Length: 204
Image (cartoon, rainbow, N blue to C red; front, top):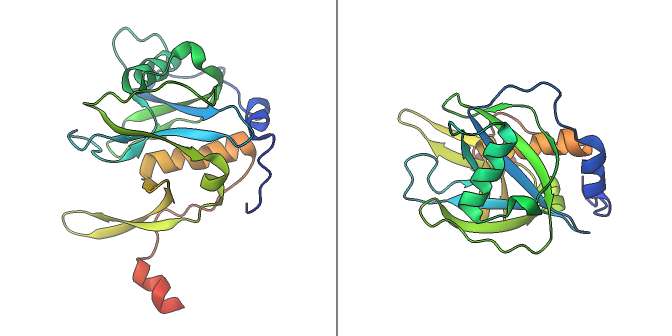
C-alpha cells in the first residue's frame, strides 16, 4: 500500500477493532501498543540474548499467563509493564485480534491499544535488550524479505519485515499482518515461505 495516507490510521483502528464477545483464556498474551499521533508508531522490543526461548528476536511486549491473571487483557498489560515499564493507565484499549499459535503450540492472544506519543519506557534488562518504535506505514509498505532460519537438518527462509535495523518475522510478523487485515482492511501478501536471496538475484 505505497503512499497510504497516514492521517486517520488510529481512527480506522478504533472504528474497526472490537473485543470478541466470547474469548477463551489464552496461555499467553501480547500488547500491540500504537502511538496515537499523525504518523502512528508500533511499540516493539528485542528480547534479551540471554533468554532460553526466542533469544534476540523482535516481539511485542507480552508473556505467559500467571495464576492470578483474570483475563487476556490483564496478562498483556501486566507483561508490558514488567518488560517496558509502560503504565497500564496510559493504554487506551481498542480491541483484540484472533488467537495465534507460537512455534511451540502455545496459544497467544494479541491485545491492541493506543498510547501517547511520548511515554517513559525502560527495558527490563533480564528480558529486553532494546525498546524501539516502528512507523505503522513503513511496516505496511515494507516488502516481505527472506529471513534465513537454520534448523538441524534444513535451512528455511521465512518472510520478514526489516525496519529500524531489526528483523520482524514469525509470530510477531503474523500478528502485524492480522492487524493490517482486521484493523485497517488491508490484506498484505504474506507467504508461508520465501525463496532464498540467491533466487531473486538469478531472476534479475
